[in-house]
Image 1 (cartoon, rainbow, N blue to C red):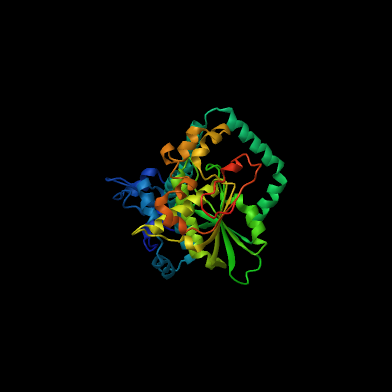
Image 2: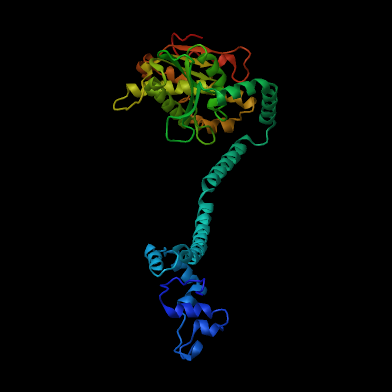
Length: 404
Protein backbone atom coordinates (compact mmCIF):
# COMPACT_ATOMS: atom_id res chain seq x y z
CA UNK A 1 0.00 0.00 0.00
CA UNK A 2 1.54 3.35 -0.97
CA UNK A 3 2.27 5.89 1.70
CA UNK A 4 -0.42 8.57 2.11
CA UNK A 5 2.32 11.20 2.49
CA UNK A 6 3.63 12.53 -0.76
CA UNK A 7 6.76 14.59 -1.21
CA UNK A 8 6.72 17.96 -2.92
CA UNK A 9 9.00 16.74 -5.71
CA UNK A 10 8.14 14.27 -8.47
CA UNK A 11 6.86 11.01 -6.92
CA UNK A 12 8.51 8.97 -9.64
CA UNK A 13 11.64 8.85 -7.48
CA UNK A 14 11.62 5.47 -5.64
CA UNK A 15 13.93 6.69 -2.92
CA UNK A 16 11.43 9.30 -1.76
CA UNK A 17 8.72 6.73 -1.12
CA UNK A 18 11.08 4.45 0.83
CA UNK A 19 12.30 7.39 2.88
CA UNK A 20 8.75 8.34 3.83
CA UNK A 21 7.82 4.79 4.82
CA UNK A 22 10.82 4.47 7.13
CA UNK A 23 10.69 7.97 8.56
CA UNK A 24 8.81 7.11 11.77
CA UNK A 25 11.34 4.42 12.85
CA UNK A 26 14.52 6.01 11.55
CA UNK A 27 16.87 8.03 13.74
CA UNK A 28 17.49 11.68 13.04
CA UNK A 29 20.84 10.89 11.47
CA UNK A 30 19.09 8.67 8.95
CA UNK A 31 16.91 11.56 7.92
CA UNK A 32 19.60 14.23 7.66
CA UNK A 33 22.45 11.93 6.57
CA UNK A 34 26.14 12.72 6.86
CA UNK A 35 29.12 13.11 4.62
CA UNK A 36 30.47 9.59 5.26
CA UNK A 37 27.41 7.43 5.73
CA UNK A 38 23.65 7.25 6.11
CA UNK A 39 20.81 4.87 6.84
CA UNK A 40 21.33 1.45 5.31
CA UNK A 41 25.07 1.96 5.01
CA UNK A 42 24.88 3.59 1.57
CA UNK A 43 26.41 6.95 0.62
CA UNK A 44 24.70 9.51 2.87
CA UNK A 45 23.05 12.69 1.66
CA UNK A 46 23.13 16.01 3.40
CA UNK A 47 20.11 18.10 4.27
CA UNK A 48 20.41 20.05 1.03
CA UNK A 49 20.25 16.79 -0.97
CA UNK A 50 17.31 15.20 0.86
CA UNK A 51 13.93 16.74 0.00
CA UNK A 52 12.36 15.04 3.03
CA UNK A 53 14.72 16.90 5.31
CA UNK A 54 13.92 20.11 3.51
CA UNK A 55 10.25 19.33 3.96
CA UNK A 56 10.41 18.76 7.72
CA UNK A 57 13.14 21.11 8.87
CA UNK A 58 13.44 24.66 7.63
CA UNK A 59 15.39 27.65 8.80
CA UNK A 60 14.10 31.20 8.95
CA UNK A 61 15.99 31.79 5.72
CA UNK A 62 14.06 28.94 4.13
CA UNK A 63 10.80 30.51 5.31
CA UNK A 64 11.69 33.72 3.56
CA UNK A 65 12.45 31.83 0.37
CA UNK A 66 9.26 29.81 0.69
CA UNK A 67 7.18 32.94 0.95
CA UNK A 68 8.19 33.95 -2.56
CA UNK A 69 7.51 30.49 -4.12
CA UNK A 70 4.10 29.67 -5.52
CA UNK A 71 2.81 26.15 -6.40
CA UNK A 72 3.05 25.35 -10.09
CA UNK A 73 0.26 23.78 -12.09
CA UNK A 74 2.82 21.60 -13.83
CA UNK A 75 3.37 19.72 -10.56
CA UNK A 76 -0.29 18.81 -10.40
CA UNK A 77 -0.21 17.57 -13.96
CA UNK A 78 2.86 15.44 -13.15
CA UNK A 79 0.93 13.79 -10.32
CA UNK A 80 -1.94 13.10 -12.63
CA UNK A 81 0.40 11.52 -15.16
CA UNK A 82 1.76 9.27 -12.42
CA UNK A 83 -1.70 7.97 -11.58
CA UNK A 84 -2.06 9.82 -8.27
CA UNK A 85 -5.16 11.89 -7.46
CA UNK A 86 -4.32 15.59 -7.81
CA UNK A 87 -6.36 16.60 -4.78
CA UNK A 88 -4.54 14.16 -2.50
CA UNK A 89 -1.21 15.20 -3.93
CA UNK A 90 -1.77 18.91 -3.67
CA UNK A 91 -3.16 18.92 -0.13
CA UNK A 92 0.08 18.43 1.87
CA UNK A 93 2.19 20.71 -0.31
CA UNK A 94 -0.50 23.39 -0.43
CA UNK A 95 -1.00 23.24 3.34
CA UNK A 96 2.72 23.49 3.97
CA UNK A 97 3.05 26.33 1.49
CA UNK A 98 0.17 28.20 3.15
CA UNK A 99 1.70 27.65 6.60
CA UNK A 100 5.03 29.04 5.47
CA UNK A 101 3.29 31.81 3.59
CA UNK A 102 1.30 32.78 6.67
CA UNK A 103 4.44 32.84 8.82
CA UNK A 104 6.31 35.07 6.40
CA UNK A 105 3.33 37.28 5.71
CA UNK A 106 2.65 37.71 9.39
CA UNK A 107 6.17 38.98 9.92
CA UNK A 108 5.76 41.45 7.06
CA UNK A 109 2.35 42.41 8.35
CA UNK A 110 3.74 43.10 11.79
CA UNK A 111 6.38 45.38 10.35
CA UNK A 112 3.83 47.21 8.20
CA UNK A 113 1.49 47.51 11.15
CA UNK A 114 4.36 48.89 13.16
CA UNK A 115 5.04 51.46 10.44
CA UNK A 116 1.36 52.38 10.25
CA UNK A 117 1.26 52.63 14.02
CA UNK A 118 4.05 55.14 13.86
CA UNK A 119 2.58 57.23 11.02
CA UNK A 120 -1.19 57.01 11.54
CA UNK A 121 -1.42 59.01 14.78
CA UNK A 122 1.21 61.50 13.62
CA UNK A 123 -1.34 63.96 12.29
CA UNK A 124 -3.37 63.65 15.46
CA UNK A 125 -0.30 64.18 17.63
CA UNK A 126 0.65 67.27 15.64
CA UNK A 127 -2.89 68.65 15.99
CA UNK A 128 -2.91 67.95 19.73
CA UNK A 129 0.50 69.53 20.18
CA UNK A 130 -0.57 72.58 18.19
CA UNK A 131 -3.78 72.96 20.19
CA UNK A 132 -1.86 72.65 23.44
CA UNK A 133 0.73 75.18 22.34
CA UNK A 134 -1.94 77.67 21.23
CA UNK A 135 -3.90 77.11 24.43
CA UNK A 136 -0.89 77.85 26.61
CA UNK A 137 -0.11 80.90 24.53
CA UNK A 138 -3.63 82.21 25.03
CA UNK A 139 -3.47 81.54 28.77
CA UNK A 140 -0.20 83.43 28.93
CA UNK A 141 -1.99 86.49 27.59
CA UNK A 142 -5.04 86.03 29.80
CA UNK A 143 -3.15 85.27 32.99
CA UNK A 144 -5.14 84.60 36.16
CA UNK A 145 -7.17 87.81 36.12
CA UNK A 146 -10.63 87.46 37.60
CA UNK A 147 -12.40 89.49 34.90
CA UNK A 148 -12.05 87.06 32.02
CA UNK A 149 -12.72 84.11 34.33
CA UNK A 150 -15.99 85.60 35.59
CA UNK A 151 -17.01 86.52 32.03
CA UNK A 152 -16.21 83.02 30.86
CA UNK A 153 -18.27 81.45 33.65
CA UNK A 154 -21.14 83.82 32.92
CA UNK A 155 -21.02 82.82 29.27
CA UNK A 156 -21.12 79.16 30.27
CA UNK A 157 -24.17 79.71 32.49
CA UNK A 158 -25.87 81.67 29.74
CA UNK A 159 -25.21 78.84 27.30
CA UNK A 160 -26.74 76.31 29.70
CA UNK A 161 -29.90 78.38 30.04
CA UNK A 162 -30.22 78.53 26.26
CA UNK A 163 -29.40 74.85 25.79
CA UNK A 164 -32.94 73.82 24.65
CA UNK A 165 -32.73 76.37 21.86
CA UNK A 166 -29.18 75.36 21.02
CA UNK A 167 -30.27 71.73 20.67
CA UNK A 168 -32.91 72.67 18.11
CA UNK A 169 -30.51 74.83 16.13
CA UNK A 170 -27.81 72.15 16.37
CA UNK A 171 -30.19 69.50 15.03
CA UNK A 172 -31.03 71.75 12.10
CA UNK A 173 -27.36 72.49 11.46
CA UNK A 174 -26.23 68.86 11.39
CA UNK A 175 -29.23 67.11 9.85
CA UNK A 176 -31.02 69.56 7.56
CA UNK A 177 -30.65 68.92 3.84
CA UNK A 178 -30.69 72.68 3.29
CA UNK A 179 -27.31 73.13 5.00
CA UNK A 180 -24.10 72.51 3.06
CA UNK A 181 -21.36 72.39 5.68
CA UNK A 182 -17.63 72.74 5.26
CA UNK A 183 -17.34 74.00 1.69
CA UNK A 184 -13.65 74.69 1.05
CA UNK A 185 -12.75 78.17 -0.15
CA UNK A 186 -8.96 78.11 0.49
CA UNK A 187 -5.97 75.95 1.26
CA UNK A 188 -5.33 77.05 4.84
CA UNK A 189 -6.84 75.64 8.05
CA UNK A 190 -10.44 76.70 8.67
CA UNK A 191 -10.83 78.05 5.15
CA UNK A 192 -14.39 76.70 5.09
CA UNK A 193 -17.89 78.08 4.81
CA UNK A 194 -21.43 76.83 5.36
CA UNK A 195 -24.27 77.46 2.92
CA UNK A 196 -27.92 77.71 3.98
CA UNK A 197 -30.16 77.17 0.97
CA UNK A 198 -33.90 77.90 0.58
CA UNK A 199 -36.25 74.99 0.02
CA UNK A 200 -37.49 76.43 -3.26
CA UNK A 201 -34.58 76.90 -5.65
CA UNK A 202 -36.64 78.01 -8.64
CA UNK A 203 -34.25 80.76 -9.67
CA UNK A 204 -31.16 82.75 -8.67
CA UNK A 205 -31.46 83.87 -5.05
CA UNK A 206 -29.99 86.88 -3.22
CA UNK A 207 -26.97 86.03 -1.11
CA UNK A 208 -25.72 87.20 2.30
CA UNK A 209 -22.04 86.57 3.06
CA UNK A 210 -21.90 86.53 6.86
CA UNK A 211 -18.82 86.72 9.10
CA UNK A 212 -19.47 85.71 12.70
CA UNK A 213 -18.07 87.32 15.84
CA UNK A 214 -16.24 85.84 18.80
CA UNK A 215 -13.85 88.48 20.21
CA UNK A 216 -11.33 87.50 17.50
CA UNK A 217 -10.68 84.34 19.58
CA UNK A 218 -13.69 82.01 19.49
CA UNK A 219 -15.32 82.89 16.17
CA UNK A 220 -16.78 79.95 14.24
CA UNK A 221 -18.99 79.58 11.19
CA UNK A 222 -21.64 77.57 13.04
CA UNK A 223 -22.46 80.61 15.20
CA UNK A 224 -24.43 81.93 12.22
CA UNK A 225 -26.72 78.90 11.96
CA UNK A 226 -29.74 80.67 13.47
CA UNK A 227 -29.38 83.59 11.06
CA UNK A 228 -28.88 81.17 8.19
CA UNK A 229 -32.04 79.27 9.12
CA UNK A 230 -34.15 82.42 9.39
CA UNK A 231 -32.97 84.00 6.15
CA UNK A 232 -33.10 80.78 4.13
CA UNK A 233 -36.77 80.47 5.10
CA UNK A 234 -37.20 83.89 3.48
CA UNK A 235 -35.71 82.77 0.17
CA UNK A 236 -32.19 84.09 0.81
CA UNK A 237 -28.95 82.09 0.56
CA UNK A 238 -26.60 82.61 3.52
CA UNK A 239 -22.87 81.86 3.38
CA UNK A 240 -21.28 81.75 6.85
CA UNK A 241 -17.55 82.25 6.35
CA UNK A 242 -15.13 80.73 8.85
CA UNK A 243 -11.69 82.20 9.56
CA UNK A 244 -8.68 81.47 11.73
CA UNK A 245 -8.69 82.95 15.24
CA UNK A 246 -6.09 84.19 17.69
CA UNK A 247 -3.66 82.83 18.85
CA UNK A 248 -3.37 80.77 15.67
CA UNK A 249 -3.15 84.00 13.65
CA UNK A 250 -3.47 87.75 14.18
CA UNK A 251 -5.88 90.27 12.68
CA UNK A 252 -4.07 90.53 9.34
CA UNK A 253 -4.60 86.85 8.55
CA UNK A 254 -8.20 87.00 9.77
CA UNK A 255 -8.89 89.77 7.25
CA UNK A 256 -7.18 87.75 4.50
CA UNK A 257 -9.30 84.69 5.29
CA UNK A 258 -12.49 86.76 5.23
CA UNK A 259 -11.51 88.38 1.94
CA UNK A 260 -10.81 85.00 0.37
CA UNK A 261 -14.17 83.69 1.57
CA UNK A 262 -15.95 86.72 0.10
CA UNK A 263 -14.11 86.10 -3.17
CA UNK A 264 -15.36 82.51 -3.25
CA UNK A 265 -18.94 83.64 -2.69
CA UNK A 266 -18.76 86.29 -5.42
CA UNK A 267 -17.21 83.94 -7.98
CA UNK A 268 -18.87 80.59 -7.22
CA UNK A 269 -22.27 81.25 -5.63
CA UNK A 270 -23.99 80.80 -9.00
CA UNK A 271 -23.04 77.11 -8.82
CA UNK A 272 -25.27 76.81 -5.73
CA UNK A 273 -28.23 78.74 -7.10
CA UNK A 274 -27.21 82.21 -5.92
CA UNK A 275 -27.34 85.44 -7.86
CA UNK A 276 -23.79 86.88 -8.16
CA UNK A 277 -25.30 90.30 -8.88
CA UNK A 278 -27.09 90.38 -5.51
CA UNK A 279 -24.42 89.66 -2.91
CA UNK A 280 -24.62 91.43 0.46
CA UNK A 281 -21.88 91.45 3.08
CA UNK A 282 -22.72 91.22 6.78
CA UNK A 283 -20.64 90.93 9.95
CA UNK A 284 -21.43 90.76 13.65
CA UNK A 285 -19.28 92.07 16.54
CA UNK A 286 -15.67 91.12 15.78
CA UNK A 287 -16.91 89.79 12.45
CA UNK A 288 -18.32 93.24 11.62
CA UNK A 289 -14.89 94.74 12.27
CA UNK A 290 -13.15 92.09 10.14
CA UNK A 291 -15.65 92.50 7.28
CA UNK A 292 -15.24 96.30 7.30
CA UNK A 293 -11.45 95.92 7.21
CA UNK A 294 -11.68 93.47 4.30
CA UNK A 295 -14.01 95.80 2.39
CA UNK A 296 -11.75 98.84 2.82
CA UNK A 297 -8.61 96.87 2.05
CA UNK A 298 -10.14 95.55 -1.17
CA UNK A 299 -11.19 99.05 -2.26
CA UNK A 300 -7.66 100.34 -1.67
CA UNK A 301 -6.21 97.44 -3.69
CA UNK A 302 -8.49 98.23 -6.62
CA UNK A 303 -7.18 101.79 -6.70
CA UNK A 304 -3.56 100.67 -6.66
CA UNK A 305 -1.54 100.07 -9.80
CA UNK A 306 -0.65 96.49 -10.64
CA UNK A 307 -2.72 95.05 -7.78
CA UNK A 308 -4.34 91.73 -8.69
CA UNK A 309 -7.75 91.15 -7.14
CA UNK A 310 -10.03 88.12 -7.17
CA UNK A 311 -13.20 90.05 -6.35
CA UNK A 312 -14.43 93.64 -6.49
CA UNK A 313 -16.27 95.82 -4.00
CA UNK A 314 -18.63 96.63 -6.85
CA UNK A 315 -19.94 93.05 -6.53
CA UNK A 316 -21.20 93.85 -3.01
CA UNK A 317 -24.61 95.51 -3.07
CA UNK A 318 -24.46 96.70 0.57
CA UNK A 319 -22.62 96.13 3.84
CA UNK A 320 -24.47 95.50 7.12
CA UNK A 321 -22.50 95.88 10.35
CA UNK A 322 -24.06 94.41 13.51
CA UNK A 323 -22.69 95.57 16.89
CA UNK A 324 -19.23 96.20 15.52
CA UNK A 325 -16.36 98.34 16.77
CA UNK A 326 -14.64 100.45 14.14
CA UNK A 327 -12.22 102.65 16.12
CA UNK A 328 -9.88 100.41 18.07
CA UNK A 329 -8.02 103.28 19.71
CA UNK A 330 -11.20 104.14 21.58
CA UNK A 331 -11.88 100.55 22.59
CA UNK A 332 -8.59 99.38 24.12
CA UNK A 333 -9.33 100.62 27.62
CA UNK A 334 -12.95 99.48 27.50
CA UNK A 335 -11.99 95.98 26.43
CA UNK A 336 -9.38 95.86 29.20
CA UNK A 337 -12.05 96.67 31.79
CA UNK A 338 -14.22 93.87 30.40
CA UNK A 339 -11.55 91.17 30.60
CA UNK A 340 -10.02 91.43 27.12
CA UNK A 341 -6.74 92.64 28.56
CA UNK A 342 -4.59 95.22 26.84
CA UNK A 343 -1.68 92.85 26.24
CA UNK A 344 -4.00 90.27 24.70
CA UNK A 345 -5.85 92.79 22.54
CA UNK A 346 -2.62 94.35 21.28
CA UNK A 347 -1.33 90.86 20.50
CA UNK A 348 -4.42 90.20 18.40
CA UNK A 349 -4.07 93.53 16.57
CA UNK A 350 -0.34 93.10 15.89
CA UNK A 351 0.78 95.78 18.32
CA UNK A 352 -0.25 99.29 19.25
CA UNK A 353 1.24 100.70 16.07
CA UNK A 354 -1.32 98.72 14.00
CA UNK A 355 -4.44 99.94 15.81
CA UNK A 356 -4.98 102.81 13.40
CA UNK A 357 -4.41 100.61 10.36
CA UNK A 358 -7.14 98.20 11.50
CA UNK A 359 -9.60 100.91 12.57
CA UNK A 360 -12.03 101.34 9.64
CA UNK A 361 -13.32 104.61 11.08
CA UNK A 362 -9.82 106.14 11.00
CA UNK A 363 -8.82 104.60 7.67
CA UNK A 364 -11.92 105.92 5.91
CA UNK A 365 -11.13 109.44 7.13
CA UNK A 366 -7.71 109.45 5.47
CA UNK A 367 -7.85 112.01 2.62
CA UNK A 368 -5.35 109.97 0.61
CA UNK A 369 -7.83 107.17 0.00
CA UNK A 370 -10.93 109.16 -0.91
CA UNK A 371 -11.05 107.47 -4.29
CA UNK A 372 -11.06 104.06 -2.65
CA UNK A 373 -13.76 105.11 -0.18
CA UNK A 374 -15.94 106.30 -3.03
CA UNK A 375 -15.94 102.77 -4.43
CA UNK A 376 -17.54 101.29 -1.32
CA UNK A 377 -21.14 100.06 -1.37
CA UNK A 378 -23.85 101.52 0.90
CA UNK A 379 -23.05 100.91 4.58
CA UNK A 380 -25.77 100.20 7.16
CA UNK A 381 -24.82 99.84 10.84
CA UNK A 382 -26.92 98.31 13.62
CA UNK A 383 -26.11 98.44 17.33
CA UNK A 384 -28.20 97.74 20.43
CA UNK A 385 -28.16 100.46 23.07
CA UNK A 386 -27.99 97.84 25.84
CA UNK A 387 -24.96 96.09 24.34
CA UNK A 388 -22.08 95.88 26.83
CA UNK A 389 -19.70 93.75 24.76
CA UNK A 390 -19.03 96.76 22.54
CA UNK A 391 -20.65 100.02 23.67
CA UNK A 392 -23.30 101.44 21.37
CA UNK A 393 -21.45 104.75 21.05
CA UNK A 394 -18.67 102.82 19.30
CA UNK A 395 -20.73 102.54 16.12
CA UNK A 396 -18.71 105.30 14.55
CA UNK A 397 -20.01 106.59 11.25
CA UNK A 398 -16.91 105.76 9.24
CA UNK A 399 -18.42 106.72 5.89
CA UNK A 400 -20.29 109.79 4.71
CA UNK A 401 -23.89 108.89 4.03
CA UNK A 402 -23.67 105.84 6.26
CA UNK A 403 -27.00 104.71 7.74
CA UNK A 404 -26.90 104.04 11.48
